Image (tube, rainbow, N blue to C red; front, side, top):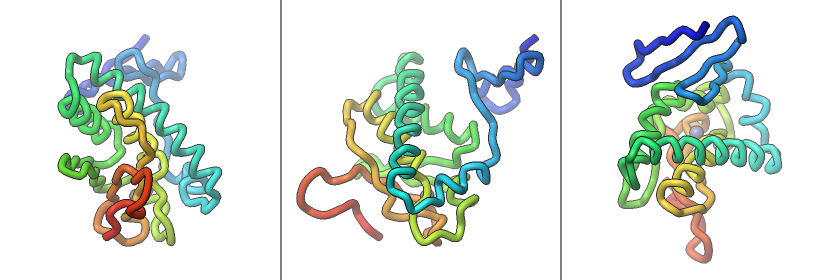
Length: 171
Ligand SMILES: [Zn+2]
């Protein structure tokens, strides 16, 4: 029998220990320790990083659709989805819409991988691409020019520049 826990505002987490399932609404979720992902997120292998980004992209698209399904659009849908991210432990997101850029404080991936010589939040890059793809109609890769795992005060994400002009806004 599923058991609902709505103590975290807005998060209806259904536990079903008999079947070994957790769900938010009709979507299955999985709780894992961030350390589980350190060998992947901390890898310097570009192929591994790309696979993490692709996984994040899939989840981000689903999250974006869930935001749209709540009757929200555009920036409101993005803000709702990112606020949900805080409820499920991905850290606190803040969008700077004039960039756009996304700042993430307390990334679980950065905290688990620190210290690192390179950014580690590849899943988040993919999630942002997925959300923007689904909600804002903009399917471009995101870069992480600053990561808390490398000593930055917070992780920062920007859409990749397609041509010319170099990469994102390095700090
Ligand atoms: Zn990071």
